[in-house]
Length: 354
Image (tube, rainbow, N blue to C red):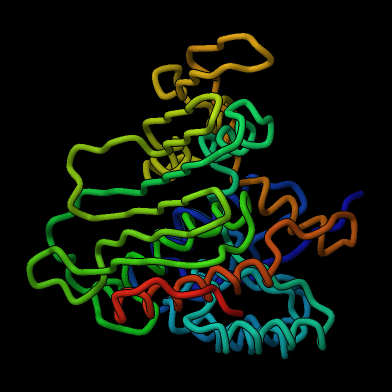
């Protein structure tokens, strides 16, 4: 019989309700035992959706529970570091919603503490398990495009209003699009190409009355390769999600992974037999010369599966697999964000420094 990993989930807002709990429920061996939430409407939703879980209003009820093995921090960005620290000190393994922390100093402190406590510490960089990114990684790794010279990734939305009553619209440390969607784009780029030599960024606010960063254009400079990462909240007509050019060909991909839309619609992997499978109209287009043959046409997207992250965490806790989203990688993502903000403020390209 496989071991059950009991989970305490901190936060049942958008992240906890939509992106964590349905995926946890879809992974054998994981059990959502306690949920910490204080807002009445979220408490009610948690009790309806997960009646076997105990809803508490104090994080200490999770930290002091000896039966809980893994704490998932899905609360506001400024709370990530202090809550992760408390959980580690309580002897728990920890998974933190992205962004990992607000600063690299906070991240470094958590890395040291996790090593001292001999506990798994990881971050919910779930977009590594997007169907389109998995496809892009396969194309890059295969060498189908020859020597890659341009990689461009967009994560755009259209939301021209300022949402009321949410910390995400407040000018708080760690708020704004660069920390939010930027964390995913940067993580994907670093996974593919490693750390850049230099960084150039333009970061700004475009919506009227907005208090946060809602647009960025980030360039990561490598030897022979330019990586561009862009996101904005005033993009009504979306362009390609991924644009890759090499000295042998190109790969262009429109559309987004279908898992987010399914989760926001209240579905879970347990409800959908073809979970994470993109429709053919979203498949990317490849045009290249490979082994002296001209290849042109749509490439079937890989299957997306956010369960893969939690399945890996489960095995890592049991000592059966190497952790895929390493905290050191998530720390480097935060460092890129810090340097991007420096570059934008100083209007210059800056060298990557640890």
